[in-house]
Structures are given as structure tokens and as C-alpha cells.
Length: 133
Image 1 (cartoon, rainbow, N blue to C red):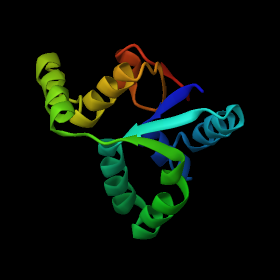
Image 2 (cartoon, rainbow, N blue to C red; image 1 turned 90 degrees about the vertical axis):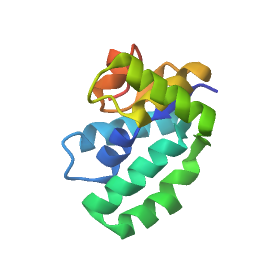
Image 3 (tube, rainbow, N blue to C red; image 1 turned 180 degrees about the horizontal axis):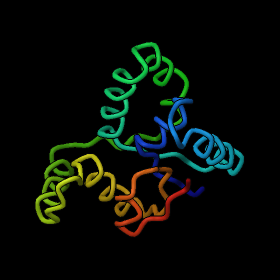
Image 4 (cartoon, rainbow, N blue to C red; image 1 turned 180 degrees about the vertical axis):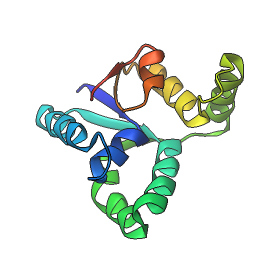
């Protein structure tokens, strides 16, 4: 089974009808479900997603995400080694708006040989990954 990495930007677009990319996210998600593609993310993406959902849509949105969407995801739990390697990437790149979450995502994708991301974040494309959006 092929797998796609799921980023916070895609989750927010999918769950928030006010997001500019909402309709695109819905279309991509429907295609991924039809293809029965495995959805993979990291625990860092989950933390970022929970925080942004709470701020933008409230705690009911966090609870709904946790109950209905998070179970669809295979989660790579970030330990100290991956965290430190991600921080190394951020510091080596010296790109001010590259987040630790994104850097860890790139490492996970390479480690798992995943080249497609369900994301609306240009950093994935800049890193050489294909964006499904």
C-alpha cells in the first residue's frame, strides 16, 4: 500500500470551511480514501494541529479531530533523536520560516520513502516532495 504524509496545513484546510484551500482539501481527501492510500503523520504534526484547531475553531474541533480523523493516521512518534536531527536541519538551512515540525516531517518522509504530501505548505515542494492539493 502506498502512503502519503499528512501535514497540519491539509488538516486545517480539510476541517475548516473558511480556509481558502478547503474545497481542494476535500477533493484530495476523497481521492486518497478512494485509492485506499495509507495516511502517515508525526506526533509533532498532531501537536501543531491540536494547537491550531483549538485556537481557530475551538476545543470541540479538537475533540472531533481526535475522534474521527486521527484514527485514520499512522503516527510516527518523535523521540529525542528525531527531534535533534530535525533541529539540526533547521539550523543548517538557516531558513527563518522553516519550522521544526516541517523539518521533522521531511526526515520522516525520507526515512519512510514517502514522496507525496497532503499539504498546502510550500516548504514540502521546496524540499522536493510532490504536493497533493
